[in-house]
Image: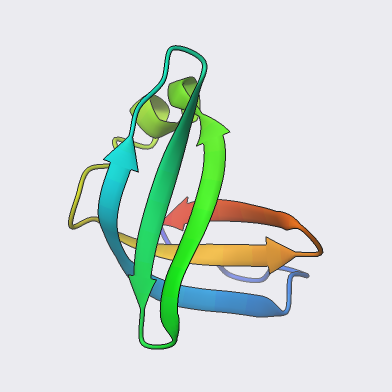
Length: 71
């Protein structure tokens, strides 16, 4: 899968450093060249994207929201 285009301008490529899983939501820490970016997303999304420590992702930041796209 590749992202062809997206309207979010603040994108940080990195690797997942840590996932703290909860019953409903999980905290995903992404290590980027500019530091750690943390996203709180549903645990279902973590499972659906098959996110694990070491996965290459793009953190998409819009206002106070951080989304994750798996590469």
